[in-house]
Length: 553
Image (cartoon, rainbow, N blue to C red; front, side, top):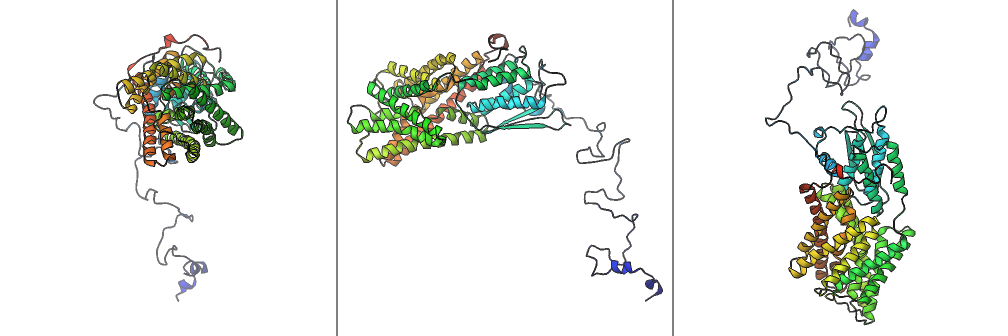
């Protein structure tokens, strides 16, 4: 050992001892330049030593992933690409209803939306963004819980935000969750809020009041402050239903009686009364189950049993009536036509998650109805009830009676939906027109029932959209009750009866026909509404109603 090695510190011996160091230690004999005694920690993303990157004069050092890179310079950037045809100019028709304008902007990318119109409701320091978003979510909650389509809910939320000057807003609606995000600028943090819809109720009077509020907020000539909007919204929430409970029960009975006249083909008072009594008993039992906290599936199951039991009892008693017409009339009061139309509409407009949830809800309700009716029919067949599947399949010989029955059905359906009294007459006439078109095509023209139903439902959607444009309101109160006479109650009953009589193949064919009719109704209503939006320009700011504009609800 040399003298120099004897003078080497013991710490160096420990440094190169393999028992003390690891495989990442510097090997003995490798000369590594020292860096002032501090360790240099880098990564594979660091700029290699010796590589010089051009840096503009006066540029700040790169601090994070959100700062521009050192090689970027806005002055030296290439010019933006412009197509040879130019950038298309987006123009909105100001005389069109706010629903059409908001829907058009929602279908555009954010960067292509036009700037908001001049806002008269800006407060000092600008609008309170969290409060505006909260008001928007509360309005969207009432609309979604009332059965409005997802696209229409988003359009209303977008209209409320733009009316208070919040331009960069993105509403998002699913079956049970509402959310909205607002980003003031490209360099500021976005503000996001959400709200959960837990309870759903059918009250089209409240739905119309919310539409009137959004309509006033969207009108540039009407100044509604944020506090005034909150006050009106609170009054809408506290609003009592326009019809008492006993009126709803009576309306359900009359609806079932009117539906029995549609399928019986002749005016039989016994059938009418039996169907009405069965529907009212089912309604009271459903209310009892709801008071006990049972889910809606069991409420539909229990409500479907009394009409079926009365129909089987009349057959066992050998009363000269059509028991199938009694059972079919009771089914009309339970079929979830409103949820079906909303579900198909959401699917056609691209809201597939919400559409799937709505259609799944319809399927559960339908299975509940099937369970209740099929249980009664099964025991009725076992104890000797001879129910004829073809008993109600006869061409009507009294078209005027059926038109009157269809109008009565639409009238009672509107009451069940808690519609405004001013809309009941219009939807009653719309239901009569729908059945007249269906009867002329189906019986006089011998056209397929699915095609006849689709055309009649298309007229319902067209007329409903025209009426809603004229009154600046939602189209649901003018369309939902009008499709009541077209609901596939008889096809559903015949399919269940065939299954109860062990004719499964025939029953499945009849149920498939019922599903086809239901889809024809939903697609027809949506198509009629879209046709009216495309080709008809009804409604303008100069024809707005003068009452209830700034006075509250």
